[in-house]
Length: 137
Image 1 (cartoon, rainbow, N blue to C red):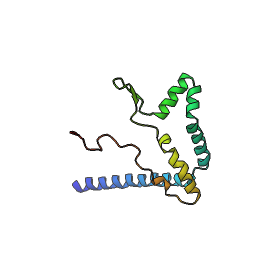
Image 2: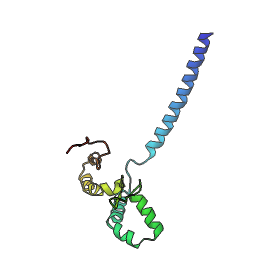
Image 3: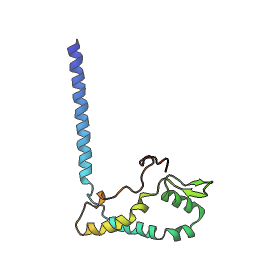
Image 4: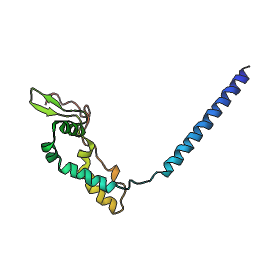
């Protein structure tokens, strides 16, 4: 009886694996039909740069709802206010704004044929707890 149950489990496993392999093949086929590069990447970067370069003007002329959306875009984790120090703080700035300068420089490198620029982003902000405590200084 144990052999029959074991054989049934093996058959079920084989059937499931066959179905999974078919799904993987179908997905791989669909992926192979997609373009390997974004055709309008240069246009997208130029529009993003215009947004970045004109962010002060956009903010100044925007209505309240647009400002809320723009603020959410810029500071995805929100803005905090420290009442004692009377400072506005944020834990996270949109990666677009922190990496725009690097992208602009590296886009020129890509046009020259260098393609490893996407892997050269240094960490922009150290996370809490990275540095040792400095008590007694």
